Length: 307
Ligand SMILES: [Zn+2]
Ligand SMILES: [Zn+2]
Image (cartoon, rainbow, N blue to C red; front, side):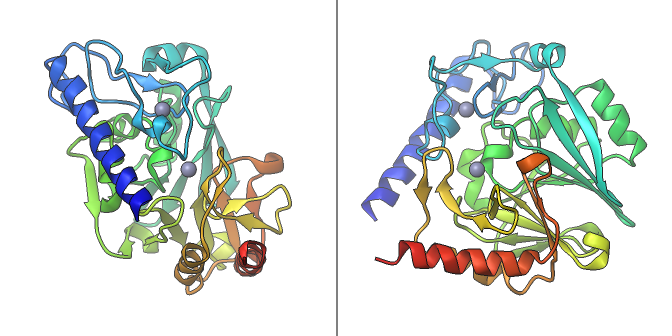
């Protein structure tokens, strides 16, 4: 409890200090015409509200689930990133494309574009958005809605929304304190499930983050269903195993009740395939029997942490 209270205090202080930085620079958080810059943290890729100089801290990286760059907090801009990086859009299966920034930027996750008969959904996000990416995504039908698993991947979500007509971004309300660039395009939802277009559904699992959400894509894997997992469950080097962590870089595990809760939330969803946030062994998928893999891996985890 004490640890939770400390974390809450930290989040509160962190978001207060981000707001204070914005106020100091004379810009309202989320403003666009202030003549400042929306800096990106190079370690986590998060883009911050517009300021006239780089923020002093990145609360996402200072949180115990992440880490500050070994040489100290560093920032970049979208223009600099556009000059040094590119996005690779790759077809993963029918109606599904991955978007991956090369060379690696920030945490190194990928995003996905899912095409449905009722429009397209961007799942998760990356820090880079540029004209070639926008052109390619437009060829694939554009983006109508955006949903992001958790704050580690919020990155440049507001830029992505604006590039596609202000597409709504659906985040769980529990993660509101971690939004570093507030914007009207961000819609917070509450509860345990939220339907998106085309039969897609967000499910809150908690665990890695209290408002952690996965995306269920029933038409994925040729109609057998796919789970868009982000980094929880995390696909292991052996794609017959997944894992669950409070912090991946700092090796902080989840406790038994948190693992059970994640499994309880995933078990009712019909899925055969799991898509993770990273190209593990060049792929980053559990190609088949995904549900079985989740249940078996959770059992193994619970046995391992039993005192
Ligand atoms: Zn950061
Ligand atoms: Zn994460």
